[in-house]
Amino acid sequence: MNPLIFTTILMTVLLGTMIVMMSSHWLMIWIGFEMNLLAIIPILMKKYNPRTMEASTKYFLTQATASMLLMMAIIINLMHSGQWTITKVFNPTASIIMTSALAMKLGLTPFHFWVPEVTQGISLTSGLILLTWQKLAPMSILYQISPSINLNILLTMAVLSILVGGWGGLNQTQLRKIMAYSSIAHMGWMTAVLVYSPTLTMLNMLIYIMMTLTMFMLFIQSSSTTTLSLSHTWNKTPLTTTLILITLLSMGGLPPLSGFMPKWMIIQELTKNSSIILPTLMAIMALLNLYFYMRLTYSTSLTMFPSTNNMKMKWQFETKQITLLPPLIVMSSLLLPLTPMLSILD
Amino acid sequence: MMTYIVFILSVIFVVSFVGFSSKPSPIYGGLVLIVSGGVGCGIIMNFGGSFLGLMVFLIYLGGMLVVFGYTTAMATEQYPEVWVSNTTVMGVFLLGLLMEVMLVLYVLKGEEVGVVFKFSGVGDWAIYDTGDSGVFSEEIMGVAALYSYGAWVVIVTGWSLLVGVLVILEVTRGD
Image (cartoon, rainbow over all chains, first blue to last red; front, side):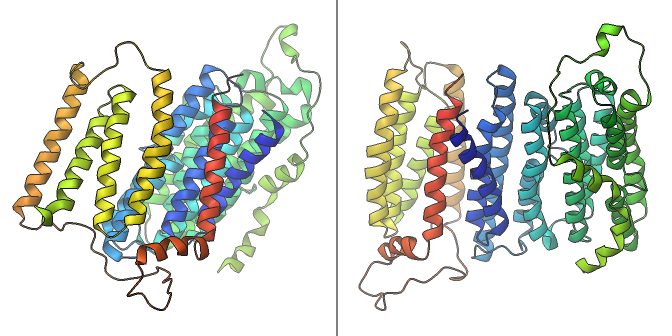
């Protein structure tokens, strides 16, 4: 793509999300969502093969349906409250429709079916933008309407998302689909605590974005999209095998790494609100996630599967330099001792 | 009949929307779009928005729909689909008509036709006041307010339209 046009379109994606996050008028928020959707389509379609076109079409259809539902919720809110400002949505019908629309945009169950298919059909960099940046705008709207969200619907969607994200990722060997199911599960964790403490949702979003950025950049650096290809990184850059190990275990939520911080805080906040069964179930279902992360680490850094000598070499000989990678790796694994600093958020 | 003119126009509006949603060939879709545009203009005019209605005719029907008509005329097939040529299209059209008839009967049974939005207050609208709102039409004041209080909206929508054109060109470029 022409670099000037590509820059313009990328800046429009950023502008769309910024408009969503900074507007106080519902119509501007809707315009921001549409601008974001419109501008990310050519980014998803960077290569012109039928798979990317199919993935972008699926993405466009689901997100446009979600925008239509959002507009309907906005109009119903307008009919019953007579104003356009972002406050809690007082009418229960409008609130439920809006929650469903934002869940469709985020990829929560039962609207999760597009996430693995779209993520698989596009390139790694586009998948990175899809799974990290595109989650910011709907989550900011959920944050702003969080006092009025129907708890039953949101918790049902959250728990089912964690279940689907864990279970669905079990049979995958394609790395993009694994990251997609991991995204579904993390969105479930984020929305589970939204009604109780929106600050923890934002904390989880921050740490999730850092860890997903790290994982995707490690995949981009070794140009690997399957588990088999990832298992050959020991031959190319042996250091990245250790880094993949650490980052994957952090994504699974294991204690001395920073991925444990949001899960710990969320479980603590849920138990403070006297729900015991729910965080137990969530923690148990996070084990499914941990299983397929550990399977990746097993094949990448812990074992070398027996193979013939010509399969051991990867064909790509020039190294990519990703500047942001070392700070991201550090941040996605070593942030746990900073947990007491969370008290400044109150 | 004149007291219920808005209701009748809105029924024609919905019927023409059903007409193109049942997906005949785009030429016929454009035909009912013209009808729906004209009828929509009539609805807006009945609420006092003469400027907006005329803008619908001029820009929408006279600009965008003309270009749409030319492009579909270039890309049309030898036997385009009408509403009665295909069982599916006719079925969807009749289903839409049936639902509209049921809705009309429900509205008429309730003995009130003024079933439009009920606003409960002025709320957050920025009041663009020329100081003497009894003489000027407030709708033109709203259009003028678009360029003063609503400058950010104009910038955002203008930018989205520009990026929309860039995106469409980029997507249809192929390789």
